[in-house]
Image (tube, rainbow over all chains, first blue to last red; front, side, top):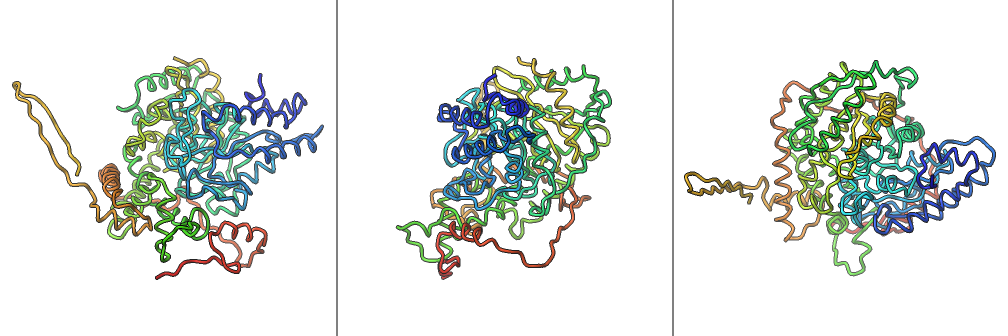
Length: 483
Length: 118
Protein backbone atom coordinates (compact mmCIF):
# COMPACT_ATOMS: atom_id res chain seq x y z
CA UNK A 1 0.00 0.00 0.00
CA UNK A 2 1.29 3.45 -0.85
CA UNK A 3 1.94 5.95 1.93
CA UNK A 4 -0.78 8.41 0.96
CA UNK A 5 -3.46 5.71 1.06
CA UNK A 6 -2.92 4.79 4.71
CA UNK A 7 -5.51 5.18 7.44
CA UNK A 8 -4.53 6.59 10.85
CA UNK A 9 -4.27 3.10 12.31
CA UNK A 10 -2.13 1.84 9.41
CA UNK A 11 0.14 4.90 9.41
CA UNK A 12 0.61 4.59 13.17
CA UNK A 13 1.55 0.95 12.76
CA UNK A 14 4.07 1.88 10.05
CA UNK A 15 5.64 4.57 12.23
CA UNK A 16 5.79 2.23 15.18
CA UNK A 17 7.52 -0.51 13.17
CA UNK A 18 9.79 2.11 11.60
CA UNK A 19 8.69 1.11 8.09
CA UNK A 20 8.84 4.82 7.35
CA UNK A 21 9.44 8.06 9.25
CA UNK A 22 6.97 10.87 9.82
CA UNK A 23 9.15 13.02 7.57
CA UNK A 24 8.82 10.50 4.73
CA UNK A 25 5.08 10.27 5.28
CA UNK A 26 4.68 14.06 5.36
CA UNK A 27 6.85 14.54 2.26
CA UNK A 28 4.79 11.94 0.38
CA UNK A 29 1.62 13.95 1.02
CA UNK A 30 3.21 17.32 0.24
CA UNK A 31 4.56 15.97 -3.04
CA UNK A 32 1.18 14.55 -3.97
CA UNK A 33 -0.59 17.82 -3.13
CA UNK A 34 2.02 19.78 -5.09
CA UNK A 35 1.40 17.61 -8.14
CA UNK A 36 -2.38 17.12 -8.03
CA UNK A 37 -4.03 19.94 -6.12
CA UNK A 38 -3.78 22.58 -8.86
CA UNK A 39 -6.66 20.94 -10.69
CA UNK A 40 -8.65 20.00 -7.55
CA UNK A 41 -8.33 23.03 -5.26
CA UNK A 42 -8.54 21.32 -1.85
CA UNK A 43 -6.16 23.70 -0.07
CA UNK A 44 -6.34 27.47 0.36
CA UNK A 45 -3.03 27.58 2.23
CA UNK A 46 -0.37 24.92 2.54
CA UNK A 47 2.16 25.09 5.36
CA UNK A 48 5.01 22.79 4.33
CA UNK A 49 7.50 24.41 6.73
CA UNK A 50 5.32 23.89 9.77
CA UNK A 51 4.47 20.35 8.66
CA UNK A 52 8.06 19.32 7.98
CA UNK A 53 9.34 20.74 11.24
CA UNK A 54 6.59 18.96 13.23
CA UNK A 55 7.43 15.71 11.42
CA UNK A 56 11.17 16.09 12.13
CA UNK A 57 10.44 16.86 15.75
CA UNK A 58 8.40 13.67 16.00
CA UNK A 59 11.11 11.55 14.35
CA UNK A 60 13.78 12.90 16.69
CA UNK A 61 11.82 12.63 19.92
CA UNK A 62 9.72 9.52 19.56
CA UNK A 63 12.20 6.88 18.43
CA UNK A 64 11.60 3.63 20.27
CA UNK A 65 8.90 5.01 22.54
CA UNK A 66 5.17 4.53 22.80
CA UNK A 67 3.36 7.42 21.23
CA UNK A 68 -0.13 8.66 20.52
CA UNK A 69 -2.12 7.30 17.58
CA UNK A 70 -2.14 10.74 15.95
CA UNK A 71 1.56 11.45 16.55
CA UNK A 72 3.56 12.10 13.40
CA UNK A 73 0.48 11.74 11.19
CA UNK A 74 -0.49 14.44 8.65
CA UNK A 75 -3.82 16.26 8.93
CA UNK A 76 -5.70 18.88 6.91
CA UNK A 77 -7.69 21.59 8.69
CA UNK A 78 -10.75 23.47 7.44
CA UNK A 79 -9.84 27.10 7.00
CA UNK A 80 -12.29 28.35 9.62
CA UNK A 81 -10.34 26.71 12.47
CA UNK A 82 -7.51 28.84 13.87
CA UNK A 83 -3.93 27.56 13.78
CA UNK A 84 -1.55 30.00 15.48
CA UNK A 85 0.70 31.90 13.10
CA UNK A 86 -1.15 30.65 10.01
CA UNK A 87 -3.51 32.56 7.76
CA UNK A 88 -7.16 31.79 8.44
CA UNK A 89 -9.52 33.01 5.72
CA UNK A 90 -12.81 31.17 6.35
CA UNK A 91 -12.98 31.16 2.53
CA UNK A 92 -13.65 34.90 2.57
CA UNK A 93 -11.95 37.91 1.03
CA UNK A 94 -12.61 39.81 4.24
CA UNK A 95 -10.10 37.54 6.06
CA UNK A 96 -7.75 36.96 3.11
CA UNK A 97 -4.68 38.23 4.98
CA UNK A 98 -5.77 37.49 8.55
CA UNK A 99 -3.19 35.59 10.62
CA UNK A 100 -4.48 33.64 13.63
CA UNK A 101 -2.97 34.75 16.92
CA UNK A 102 -3.88 31.58 18.81
CA UNK A 103 -4.74 27.89 18.38
CA UNK A 104 -8.32 26.64 18.46
CA UNK A 105 -8.85 24.15 21.30
CA UNK A 106 -9.14 21.25 18.83
CA UNK A 107 -5.82 22.31 17.27
CA UNK A 108 -4.14 22.52 20.68
CA UNK A 109 -5.41 19.01 21.39
CA UNK A 110 -4.25 17.40 18.15
CA UNK A 111 -0.91 19.24 18.39
CA UNK A 112 -0.46 17.86 21.91
CA UNK A 113 -1.13 14.41 20.46
CA UNK A 114 1.68 15.10 17.95
CA UNK A 115 -0.31 15.84 14.78
CA UNK A 116 1.43 17.19 11.68
CA UNK A 117 -0.67 19.95 10.09
CA UNK A 118 -0.29 20.14 6.31
CA UNK A 119 -2.43 23.19 5.67
CA UNK A 120 -5.84 24.81 5.58
CA UNK A 121 -8.61 23.54 3.35
CA UNK A 122 -10.98 25.25 0.95
CA UNK A 123 -14.54 25.98 1.98
CA UNK A 124 -17.68 27.92 1.18
CA UNK A 125 -17.31 31.46 2.50
CA UNK A 126 -17.90 31.43 6.28
CA UNK A 127 -19.19 27.85 5.85
CA UNK A 128 -22.28 29.07 3.97
CA UNK A 129 -22.94 26.72 1.11
CA UNK A 130 -23.39 23.11 0.05
CA UNK A 131 -21.05 22.91 -2.93
CA UNK A 132 -17.78 24.72 -2.26
CA UNK A 133 -18.63 27.20 -5.01
CA UNK A 134 -19.07 30.03 -2.50
CA UNK A 135 -15.33 30.02 -1.74
CA UNK A 136 -14.10 33.56 -2.43
CA UNK A 137 -10.90 32.13 -3.96
CA UNK A 138 -11.66 29.13 -6.18
CA UNK A 139 -14.07 26.21 -6.02
CA UNK A 140 -12.77 22.82 -4.88
CA UNK A 141 -13.63 19.99 -7.26
CA UNK A 142 -14.82 16.47 -6.63
CA UNK A 143 -11.80 14.18 -7.09
CA UNK A 144 -14.07 11.42 -8.48
CA UNK A 145 -15.34 13.71 -11.25
CA UNK A 146 -13.70 17.10 -11.71
CA UNK A 147 -16.82 18.54 -13.36
CA UNK A 148 -18.78 18.00 -10.17
CA UNK A 149 -18.85 19.70 -6.78
CA UNK A 150 -17.37 17.99 -3.72
CA UNK A 151 -20.21 19.26 -1.53
CA UNK A 152 -19.79 21.82 1.21
CA UNK A 153 -19.08 23.69 3.18
CA UNK A 154 -16.13 21.53 4.39
CA UNK A 155 -15.31 20.94 0.71
CA UNK A 156 -11.51 20.90 0.86
CA UNK A 157 -11.44 18.73 3.99
CA UNK A 158 -13.57 16.00 2.36
CA UNK A 159 -11.59 16.33 -0.88
CA UNK A 160 -8.25 16.13 0.95
CA UNK A 161 -9.22 12.78 2.46
CA UNK A 162 -10.88 11.40 -0.70
CA UNK A 163 -7.96 12.44 -2.95
CA UNK A 164 -5.35 11.04 -0.52
CA UNK A 165 -3.90 14.49 0.22
CA UNK A 166 -4.11 13.85 3.94
CA UNK A 167 -4.71 10.93 6.31
CA UNK A 168 -7.62 12.76 7.92
CA UNK A 169 -9.14 16.21 8.17
CA UNK A 170 -11.15 18.39 10.51
CA UNK A 171 -14.29 20.11 9.28
CA UNK A 172 -17.22 21.96 10.79
CA UNK A 173 -20.91 21.14 10.47
CA UNK A 174 -23.74 23.65 10.95
CA UNK A 175 -26.40 22.04 8.75
CA UNK A 176 -24.57 19.17 7.07
CA UNK A 177 -21.21 20.72 6.19
CA UNK A 178 -19.23 17.65 7.27
CA UNK A 179 -21.70 14.91 6.34
CA UNK A 180 -22.81 16.18 2.93
CA UNK A 181 -19.29 16.60 1.41
CA UNK A 182 -18.28 13.29 3.04
CA UNK A 183 -21.25 11.72 1.25
CA UNK A 184 -20.39 13.34 -2.12
CA UNK A 185 -16.71 12.34 -1.87
CA UNK A 186 -17.22 8.80 -0.50
CA UNK A 187 -15.54 9.25 2.90
CA UNK A 188 -16.62 9.11 6.56
CA UNK A 189 -17.76 12.30 8.33
CA UNK A 190 -18.96 12.79 11.91
CA UNK A 191 -20.96 15.69 13.31
CA UNK A 192 -20.72 15.27 17.11
CA UNK A 193 -23.45 16.10 19.66
CA UNK A 194 -23.71 19.86 20.15
CA UNK A 195 -21.29 20.74 22.93
CA UNK A 196 -19.23 17.54 22.71
CA UNK A 197 -16.35 19.38 21.02
CA UNK A 198 -15.13 22.88 21.97
CA UNK A 199 -15.85 25.61 19.43
CA UNK A 200 -13.13 27.89 20.81
CA UNK A 201 -11.13 29.08 17.80
CA UNK A 202 -13.75 28.05 15.26
CA UNK A 203 -14.84 31.09 13.25
CA UNK A 204 -18.51 31.33 14.21
CA UNK A 205 -21.29 30.99 11.68
CA UNK A 206 -24.38 29.96 13.66
CA UNK A 207 -23.20 29.39 17.21
CA UNK A 208 -26.16 27.31 18.41
CA UNK A 209 -25.57 24.78 15.61
CA UNK A 210 -21.84 24.78 14.73
CA UNK A 211 -19.75 21.73 15.69
CA UNK A 212 -16.25 20.63 14.69
CA UNK A 213 -15.81 17.02 13.64
CA UNK A 214 -13.54 14.57 11.79
CA UNK A 215 -13.51 13.52 8.13
CA UNK A 216 -11.69 10.21 7.67
CA UNK A 217 -11.23 7.12 5.53
CA UNK A 218 -12.67 4.76 8.14
CA UNK A 219 -15.09 4.78 11.06
CA UNK A 220 -12.30 3.67 13.40
CA UNK A 221 -10.23 6.72 12.43
CA UNK A 222 -13.20 9.03 13.09
CA UNK A 223 -13.52 7.54 16.55
CA UNK A 224 -9.82 8.07 17.27
CA UNK A 225 -10.03 11.77 16.39
CA UNK A 226 -13.30 12.27 18.24
CA UNK A 227 -11.69 10.83 21.37
CA UNK A 228 -8.86 13.38 21.07
CA UNK A 229 -10.88 16.52 20.32
CA UNK A 230 -13.94 16.05 22.55
CA UNK A 231 -14.39 17.29 26.13
CA UNK A 232 -15.38 20.29 28.18
CA UNK A 233 -13.36 23.43 27.65
CA UNK A 234 -13.40 26.47 29.89
CA UNK A 235 -13.03 28.62 26.78
CA UNK A 236 -16.37 27.41 25.35
CA UNK A 237 -19.19 27.69 27.86
CA UNK A 238 -21.47 25.49 25.73
CA UNK A 239 -19.01 22.57 25.76
CA UNK A 240 -19.85 19.58 27.92
CA UNK A 241 -18.07 16.54 29.24
CA UNK A 242 -19.45 13.50 27.50
CA UNK A 243 -20.92 10.87 29.75
CA UNK A 244 -20.25 7.82 27.68
CA UNK A 245 -23.41 5.81 28.09
CA UNK A 246 -22.60 2.78 26.03
CA UNK A 247 -19.11 1.41 25.99
CA UNK A 248 -18.58 -0.29 22.65
CA UNK A 249 -17.88 -3.67 24.22
CA UNK A 250 -21.28 -3.69 25.92
CA UNK A 251 -23.34 -3.14 22.76
CA UNK A 252 -24.75 -6.21 21.01
CA UNK A 253 -25.70 -5.92 17.36
CA UNK A 254 -28.79 -8.13 17.59
CA UNK A 255 -30.11 -5.97 20.42
CA UNK A 256 -29.97 -2.78 18.36
CA UNK A 257 -33.22 -1.25 17.14
CA UNK A 258 -32.94 0.89 14.03
CA UNK A 259 -35.56 3.39 12.88
CA UNK A 260 -36.17 4.41 9.27
CA UNK A 261 -38.11 7.70 9.19
CA UNK A 262 -40.71 7.63 6.41
CA UNK A 263 -40.41 11.42 5.95
CA UNK A 264 -36.90 10.96 4.54
CA UNK A 265 -38.00 8.93 1.54
CA UNK A 266 -39.92 11.59 -0.30
CA UNK A 267 -40.51 13.03 -3.75
CA UNK A 268 -37.40 14.85 -4.87
CA UNK A 269 -34.94 12.20 -3.76
CA UNK A 270 -33.01 10.72 -6.69
CA UNK A 271 -34.58 7.24 -7.23
CA UNK A 272 -31.14 5.69 -7.70
CA UNK A 273 -29.95 7.13 -4.39
CA UNK A 274 -33.13 5.86 -2.73
CA UNK A 275 -32.73 2.34 -4.10
CA UNK A 276 -29.04 2.28 -3.13
CA UNK A 277 -29.87 3.29 0.44
CA UNK A 278 -32.72 0.76 0.62
CA UNK A 279 -30.37 -1.93 -0.66
CA UNK A 280 -27.94 -0.92 2.07
CA UNK A 281 -30.69 -1.24 4.67
CA UNK A 282 -31.57 -4.73 3.37
CA UNK A 283 -27.96 -5.79 3.83
CA UNK A 284 -27.98 -4.44 7.36
CA UNK A 285 -30.94 -6.67 8.21
CA UNK A 286 -28.67 -9.68 7.66
CA UNK A 287 -26.67 -8.69 10.74
CA UNK A 288 -29.69 -9.31 12.93
CA UNK A 289 -30.64 -5.75 13.88
CA UNK A 290 -34.31 -4.93 14.24
CA UNK A 291 -35.45 -2.38 11.69
CA UNK A 292 -38.73 -0.51 11.94
CA UNK A 293 -40.39 2.41 10.23
CA UNK A 294 -40.70 5.51 12.41
CA UNK A 295 -42.12 8.98 11.95
CA UNK A 296 -40.52 12.38 12.51
CA UNK A 297 -43.65 14.38 11.71
CA UNK A 298 -42.14 17.89 11.78
CA UNK A 299 -39.37 17.07 9.29
CA UNK A 300 -41.08 19.16 6.61
CA UNK A 301 -40.50 22.33 8.66
CA UNK A 302 -36.81 21.72 9.36
CA UNK A 303 -35.32 23.48 6.36
CA UNK A 304 -37.47 26.61 6.75
CA UNK A 305 -36.71 26.67 10.48
CA UNK A 306 -32.99 26.31 9.74
CA UNK A 307 -32.98 29.12 7.18
CA UNK A 308 -34.43 31.52 9.73
CA UNK A 309 -32.26 30.56 12.69
CA UNK A 310 -29.00 30.42 10.74
CA UNK A 311 -29.26 33.84 9.05
CA UNK A 312 -30.36 35.36 12.36
CA UNK A 313 -27.25 34.08 14.13
CA UNK A 314 -25.12 34.94 11.09
CA UNK A 315 -26.27 38.55 11.12
CA UNK A 316 -25.12 38.87 14.74
CA UNK A 317 -21.91 36.83 14.46
CA UNK A 318 -20.66 38.54 11.32
CA UNK A 319 -21.16 42.03 12.74
CA UNK A 320 -17.59 41.69 14.07
CA UNK A 321 -16.17 42.12 10.55
CA UNK A 322 -16.28 45.89 10.64
CA UNK A 323 -13.00 47.00 9.06
CA UNK A 324 -11.79 48.27 12.45
CA UNK A 325 -10.25 45.37 14.37
CA UNK A 326 -8.85 43.03 11.72
CA UNK A 327 -9.37 41.78 8.19
CA UNK A 328 -10.08 43.66 5.00
CA UNK A 329 -10.67 47.34 5.67
CA UNK A 330 -11.40 50.41 3.62
CA UNK A 331 -8.95 52.16 5.96
CA UNK A 332 -6.12 50.31 4.22
CA UNK A 333 -7.23 51.51 0.77
CA UNK A 334 -4.92 54.40 -0.23
CA UNK A 335 -7.40 55.70 -2.84
CA UNK A 336 -10.31 55.66 -0.43
CA UNK A 337 -12.65 58.62 -0.23
CA UNK A 338 -14.32 57.63 3.02
CA UNK A 339 -15.37 60.39 5.36
CA UNK A 340 -16.58 58.77 8.54
CA UNK A 341 -16.99 55.60 10.60
CA UNK A 342 -20.20 54.47 8.87
CA UNK A 343 -18.44 54.57 5.50
CA UNK A 344 -15.69 52.29 6.87
CA UNK A 345 -18.32 49.72 7.86
CA UNK A 346 -20.34 49.96 4.66
CA UNK A 347 -17.42 49.82 2.23
CA UNK A 348 -15.32 47.20 4.05
CA UNK A 349 -18.29 44.84 4.30
CA UNK A 350 -19.45 45.56 0.75
CA UNK A 351 -16.06 44.63 -0.70
CA UNK A 352 -15.20 41.85 1.74
CA UNK A 353 -18.33 39.66 1.71
CA UNK A 354 -19.67 37.52 -1.13
CA UNK A 355 -23.31 37.33 -2.23
CA UNK A 356 -24.48 34.37 -0.11
CA UNK A 357 -23.00 35.95 3.02
CA UNK A 358 -24.74 39.24 2.20
CA UNK A 359 -28.04 37.44 1.62
CA UNK A 360 -27.88 35.68 4.97
CA UNK A 361 -26.86 38.81 6.85
CA UNK A 362 -29.81 40.68 5.34
CA UNK A 363 -32.35 37.87 5.91
CA UNK A 364 -31.17 37.61 9.52
CA UNK A 365 -31.30 41.35 10.05
CA UNK A 366 -34.84 41.35 8.65
CA UNK A 367 -35.98 38.34 10.73
CA UNK A 368 -34.65 39.87 13.95
CA UNK A 369 -35.87 43.39 13.30
CA UNK A 370 -38.59 44.96 15.36
CA UNK A 371 -42.03 43.84 14.24
CA UNK A 372 -40.79 40.66 12.56
CA UNK A 373 -39.09 38.91 15.48
CA UNK A 374 -42.18 36.96 16.62
CA UNK A 375 -43.21 35.91 13.14
CA UNK A 376 -39.79 34.63 12.15
CA UNK A 377 -37.18 34.00 14.86
CA UNK A 378 -39.47 33.13 17.78
CA UNK A 379 -41.63 30.90 15.59
CA UNK A 380 -38.51 29.15 14.28
CA UNK A 381 -37.16 28.53 17.80
CA UNK A 382 -40.55 27.03 18.72
CA UNK A 383 -40.54 24.84 15.61
CA UNK A 384 -37.07 23.78 16.70
CA UNK A 385 -38.60 22.45 19.93
CA UNK A 386 -41.08 20.42 17.85
CA UNK A 387 -38.26 18.96 15.79
CA UNK A 388 -36.31 18.08 18.93
CA UNK A 389 -39.39 16.44 20.46
CA UNK A 390 -39.84 14.28 17.34
CA UNK A 391 -36.38 12.86 17.95
CA UNK A 392 -37.00 12.43 21.71
CA UNK A 393 -40.07 10.34 20.89
CA UNK A 394 -38.20 8.35 18.25
CA UNK A 395 -35.30 7.53 20.56
CA UNK A 396 -37.73 6.05 23.08
CA UNK A 397 -38.36 3.33 20.49
CA UNK A 398 -35.08 2.98 18.60
CA UNK A 399 -31.33 3.24 19.26
CA UNK A 400 -30.31 4.75 15.95
CA UNK A 401 -31.97 6.33 12.92
CA UNK A 402 -30.91 5.64 9.34
CA UNK A 403 -31.50 8.00 6.42
CA UNK A 404 -29.82 8.96 3.17
CA UNK A 405 -27.26 11.75 3.85
CA UNK A 406 -28.31 13.67 0.72
CA UNK A 407 -31.16 13.43 -1.78
CA UNK A 408 -28.70 13.23 -4.71
CA UNK A 409 -25.13 12.36 -5.60
CA UNK A 410 -22.61 15.14 -6.34
CA UNK A 411 -24.12 17.65 -8.77
CA UNK A 412 -22.35 19.52 -11.57
CA UNK A 413 -20.40 22.72 -10.87
CA UNK A 414 -22.65 25.67 -11.73
CA UNK A 415 -25.87 23.63 -11.58
CA UNK A 416 -27.31 25.24 -8.44
CA UNK A 417 -25.11 28.30 -8.03
CA UNK A 418 -27.62 30.79 -9.44
CA UNK A 419 -30.62 29.68 -7.37
CA UNK A 420 -30.04 29.98 -3.59
CA UNK A 421 -33.14 27.90 -2.77
CA UNK A 422 -32.07 24.92 -4.88
CA UNK A 423 -28.72 25.01 -3.07
CA UNK A 424 -30.53 25.08 0.31
CA UNK A 425 -32.44 21.91 -0.64
CA UNK A 426 -29.15 19.97 -0.74
CA UNK A 427 -29.23 20.17 3.10
CA UNK A 428 -32.72 18.75 3.48
CA UNK A 429 -31.71 15.49 5.24
CA UNK A 430 -28.95 16.94 7.41
CA UNK A 431 -30.28 20.14 9.02
CA UNK A 432 -32.69 18.51 11.50
CA UNK A 433 -29.76 16.86 13.26
CA UNK A 434 -28.14 20.26 13.94
CA UNK A 435 -31.41 21.85 15.00
CA UNK A 436 -31.86 19.05 17.55
CA UNK A 437 -28.17 19.08 18.57
CA UNK A 438 -27.75 15.37 17.80
CA UNK A 439 -24.69 13.41 16.69
CA UNK A 440 -24.72 11.90 13.19
CA UNK A 441 -22.31 10.24 10.83
CA UNK A 442 -22.24 9.79 7.07
CA UNK A 443 -20.61 6.63 5.78
CA UNK A 444 -20.20 5.48 2.18
CA UNK A 445 -23.04 3.19 1.11
CA UNK A 446 -21.89 2.39 -2.44
CA UNK A 447 -21.74 4.20 -5.75
CA UNK A 448 -24.31 5.11 -8.37
CA UNK A 449 -22.78 5.63 -11.84
CA UNK A 450 -19.38 6.09 -10.25
CA UNK A 451 -20.56 8.67 -7.70
CA UNK A 452 -20.68 7.91 -3.96
CA UNK A 453 -23.90 7.73 -1.94
CA UNK A 454 -23.83 8.41 1.78
CA UNK A 455 -25.82 6.74 4.53
CA UNK A 456 -26.57 8.88 7.57
CA UNK A 457 -26.63 7.29 11.02
CA UNK A 458 -28.25 9.54 13.64
CA UNK A 459 -27.74 8.80 17.32
CA UNK A 460 -29.33 10.09 20.49
CA UNK A 461 -27.63 12.91 22.40
CA UNK A 462 -24.10 11.94 23.52
CA UNK A 463 -24.44 8.42 22.10
CA UNK A 464 -21.59 8.69 19.63
CA UNK A 465 -20.37 5.30 20.85
CA UNK A 466 -23.45 3.54 19.45
CA UNK A 467 -22.93 5.27 16.11
CA UNK A 468 -19.30 4.15 15.99
CA UNK A 469 -20.19 0.59 16.86
CA UNK A 470 -22.98 0.29 14.31
CA UNK A 471 -21.09 2.18 11.58
CA UNK A 472 -18.10 -0.10 11.95
CA UNK A 473 -20.31 -3.15 11.43
CA UNK A 474 -21.96 -1.56 8.40
CA UNK A 475 -18.70 -0.39 6.91
CA UNK A 476 -17.66 -3.97 6.25
CA UNK A 477 -21.06 -5.00 4.87
CA UNK A 478 -21.47 -2.05 2.53
CA UNK A 479 -18.15 -2.12 0.70
CA UNK A 480 -19.64 -4.31 -2.05
CA UNK A 481 -22.81 -2.31 -2.59
CA UNK A 482 -21.83 -0.47 -5.81
CA UNK A 483 -24.29 -0.27 -8.68
CA UNK B 1 -42.01 41.33 -9.70
CA UNK B 2 -42.51 37.56 -9.58
CA UNK B 3 -44.45 36.18 -12.48
CA UNK B 4 -46.15 32.80 -12.50
CA UNK B 5 -47.37 31.46 -15.80
CA UNK B 6 -49.70 28.54 -16.31
CA UNK B 7 -50.39 27.23 -19.77
CA UNK B 8 -52.90 24.57 -20.72
CA UNK B 9 -55.03 23.70 -23.67
CA UNK B 10 -58.74 23.01 -23.90
CA UNK B 11 -60.45 21.89 -27.15
CA UNK B 12 -57.41 23.07 -29.09
CA UNK B 13 -57.66 26.53 -27.53
CA UNK B 14 -54.43 27.37 -25.84
CA UNK B 15 -54.86 29.38 -22.73
CA UNK B 16 -52.09 31.15 -20.92
CA UNK B 17 -52.72 32.68 -17.54
CA UNK B 18 -50.22 35.04 -16.05
CA UNK B 19 -50.39 35.95 -12.40
CA UNK B 20 -48.27 38.81 -11.25
CA UNK B 21 -47.36 38.62 -7.59
CA UNK B 22 -45.85 41.38 -5.57
CA UNK B 23 -42.40 40.53 -4.23
CA UNK B 24 -42.32 40.04 -0.47
CA UNK B 25 -40.07 43.03 0.09
CA UNK B 26 -39.55 46.30 -1.74
CA UNK B 27 -36.29 47.80 -2.98
CA UNK B 28 -36.65 50.44 -0.32
CA UNK B 29 -36.81 47.73 2.35
CA UNK B 30 -33.71 46.06 0.94
CA UNK B 31 -31.93 49.38 1.20
CA UNK B 32 -33.13 49.82 4.79
CA UNK B 33 -32.07 46.29 5.85
CA UNK B 34 -28.66 46.74 4.23
CA UNK B 35 -28.14 49.95 6.16
CA UNK B 36 -29.17 48.31 9.44
CA UNK B 37 -26.69 45.52 8.66
CA UNK B 38 -23.97 48.06 7.79
CA UNK B 39 -23.69 46.55 4.33
CA UNK B 40 -22.94 48.79 1.38
CA UNK B 41 -24.89 47.85 -1.76
CA UNK B 42 -24.66 49.18 -5.29
CA UNK B 43 -27.81 50.64 -6.79
CA UNK B 44 -27.80 47.94 -9.47
CA UNK B 45 -27.66 45.16 -6.86
CA UNK B 46 -30.93 46.21 -5.23
CA UNK B 47 -33.13 44.43 -7.78
CA UNK B 48 -31.11 41.23 -7.58
CA UNK B 49 -31.22 41.10 -3.78
CA UNK B 50 -34.90 42.09 -3.74
CA UNK B 51 -35.66 39.07 -5.91
CA UNK B 52 -33.43 36.68 -3.98
CA UNK B 53 -34.45 37.79 -0.50
CA UNK B 54 -38.11 37.63 -1.53
CA UNK B 55 -37.74 34.06 -2.71
CA UNK B 56 -35.98 33.07 0.54
CA UNK B 57 -38.69 34.73 2.65
CA UNK B 58 -41.30 33.02 0.52
CA UNK B 59 -39.53 29.70 1.15
CA UNK B 60 -39.38 30.09 4.94
CA UNK B 61 -43.08 31.08 4.99
CA UNK B 62 -43.73 27.34 5.13
CA UNK B 63 -43.08 27.58 8.85
CA UNK B 64 -46.40 29.33 9.31
CA UNK B 65 -48.03 25.94 8.82
CA UNK B 66 -46.43 24.53 11.97
CA UNK B 67 -48.58 24.57 15.11
CA UNK B 68 -46.30 26.22 17.63
CA UNK B 69 -49.05 27.37 20.00
CA UNK B 70 -48.24 24.89 22.75
CA UNK B 71 -44.44 24.84 22.77
CA UNK B 72 -41.67 26.84 24.33
CA UNK B 73 -38.86 28.15 22.13
CA UNK B 74 -35.47 26.41 22.34
CA UNK B 75 -33.03 28.36 24.47
CA UNK B 76 -30.20 25.85 24.67
CA UNK B 77 -30.47 22.57 22.83
CA UNK B 78 -28.66 20.30 25.31
CA UNK B 79 -30.07 22.14 28.33
CA UNK B 80 -26.65 23.38 29.45
CA UNK B 81 -26.60 25.84 32.33
CA UNK B 82 -24.67 29.08 32.61
CA UNK B 83 -20.98 28.65 33.27
CA UNK B 84 -19.30 31.34 35.34
CA UNK B 85 -15.64 31.96 35.95
CA UNK B 86 -14.30 33.62 39.07
CA UNK B 87 -14.59 37.37 38.91
CA UNK B 88 -10.86 37.96 39.05
CA UNK B 89 -8.41 39.50 36.67
CA UNK B 90 -6.61 37.38 34.12
CA UNK B 91 -2.98 37.67 33.18
CA UNK B 92 -2.43 39.22 29.79
CA UNK B 93 0.17 37.73 27.52
CA UNK B 94 1.81 40.83 26.05
CA UNK B 95 3.06 38.88 23.03
CA UNK B 96 -0.51 37.88 22.20
CA UNK B 97 -1.63 41.49 22.51
CA UNK B 98 1.07 42.51 20.04
CA UNK B 99 -0.06 39.81 17.62
CA UNK B 100 -3.66 40.94 17.88
CA UNK B 101 -2.72 44.60 17.38
CA UNK B 102 -0.73 43.64 14.29
CA UNK B 103 -4.02 42.71 12.63
CA UNK B 104 -5.60 46.11 13.30
CA UNK B 105 -5.75 48.39 10.22
CA UNK B 106 -4.96 51.58 12.12
CA UNK B 107 -3.50 51.96 15.62
CA UNK B 108 -2.12 54.81 17.69
CA UNK B 109 0.07 54.29 20.76
CA UNK B 110 -1.23 50.77 21.24
CA UNK B 111 -4.87 51.73 20.79
CA UNK B 112 -7.26 50.91 17.95
CA UNK B 113 -7.90 54.06 15.94
CA UNK B 114 -11.29 54.73 14.36
CA UNK B 115 -12.63 57.35 11.97
CA UNK B 116 -14.81 60.17 13.26
CA UNK B 117 -18.46 59.25 13.77
CA UNK B 118 -19.66 62.35 11.87
